[in-house]
Image 1 (cartoon, rainbow, N blue to C red):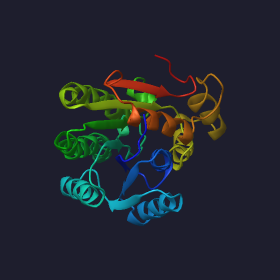
Image 2: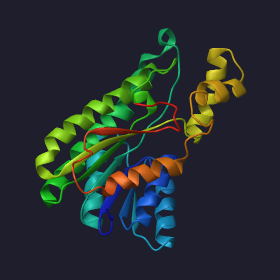
Image 3: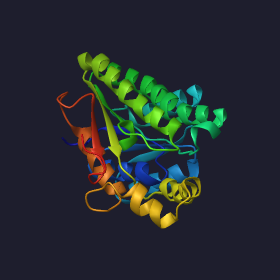
Image 4: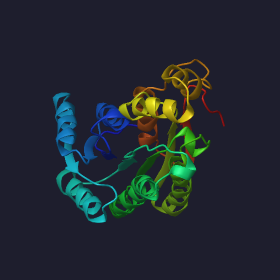
Length: 260
């Protein structure tokens, strides 16, 4: 299940889970494309990988912009030769009660999570088909791909949608050896989650400590946040998995927060 001589693109990889996925796959021999709105951040991660002895490039990409997505994929193929793995990780979080959820925020959430997943898939899968080698497409879902929580109508809707997209990719891609997966983390203490703590405390009328203990970790088996390393280890395993035995499936990485 080696990633040696493979090329992996990770979106939203300048920080957090995406960065960790990039570093993990680089350690397993993949050349990495760091795609992010923050080109300076993407280039910084690329330099970090090169300092480890790996190969990486940074590309500027707004995953909701078709032209930027296509240009980023073409740049990656031109410089590194192929796209063998896509990790569609770019995402944001906005929380509001449904009756107060601005429609503009709803559309922004769905565009980044779903349009972004679709556009990057469409651009990358063409090269996976053309190479004759196939590839792996991994979507960053959430326990909210299976569960619901208050205040997260747009996020839950988007993360559920990724399950459907992955299943279609599994069916369409099978003949040409393209596999698809959804990795579903629990609460990972990234800046995205840390930002939610005061927001949820205010919306729910409870303390920040109660948000962490009861809302975020109350359903875990061990009271521990999922780590970026936890998630990246699963992504790396799936990226290198050689057959379609697991294609179309979702994998929950949540310290028991949610169990299928």
